[in-house]
Amino acid sequence: MNLECIKGDPSTITLNDCLACTGCIENDELERFKSDISSLNRKDRYSFIISPYSKISIYNRLIQKIKKITNFKEFEIYLINFIKIFFNTNKIIDYSYFYKPEDNNISSECPAVVLYIERQYPKVLKYLNTNKTYQQMVADFIMKVNDQNTKVASIIQCYDKKDEFYRDNTKIDLLVGTSEFYTKIEKELINFINTRNLNNLSIKNKEKSYNYSGNKEMISGKVNILNFLIN
Image 1 (cartoon, one colour):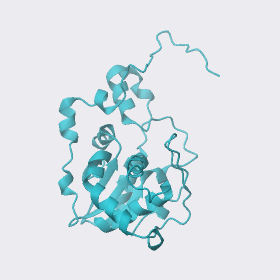
Image 2 (cartoon, one colour):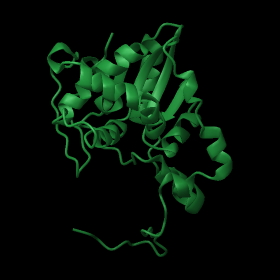
Image 3 (cartoon, one colour):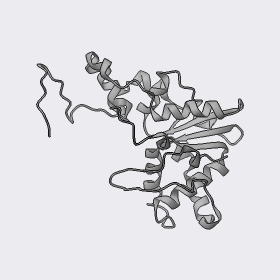
Image 4 (cartoon, helix red, strand yellow):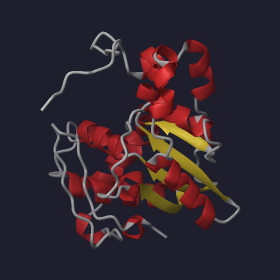
């Protein structure tokens, strides 16, 4: 049941308030967030953090071009194996595996909400969740298990997501937007899928359950993140 706000001057947010990166990231900030995608090469060793939303976006693009993929599970197996082979890969982690069902803090997956509140309603900042995001937790985890010669690359869904890494001194060597990453790998990924037999590919996630809906844009899986590490 929706209760009426008891505050004398409640804040309101409408669809006219842009919460996307185009509205919350200013032009001077965009320069700070630009990535040198050419630095993501096969020579340097990388551990990858992948946003589940980035995987969904790549999947939605690929299924329009490749009929061989019939579901999200197949796509994910192809993608993980491709990244492992195409790059000098140490580990790959989907940060959704840091989600715990018992988490009950109120927060937003989109950092743009935080940016919007900071600029429009700074008086309510004290009420915001100050816990690290799942992506930040993965970055901290990787830094503990990586060797010194391994870099960290994060594939993220939007420029806003890059902003959170500048807030808590999260150590990330390369932040790459989904479109940037897809543009770099599209040709090779399509060729990889067309020339590889799915039965010959493997992924270390025996306990993982898939639940993808193109409309709801949701992925669910079991909590044990180690099932999604590729060594």
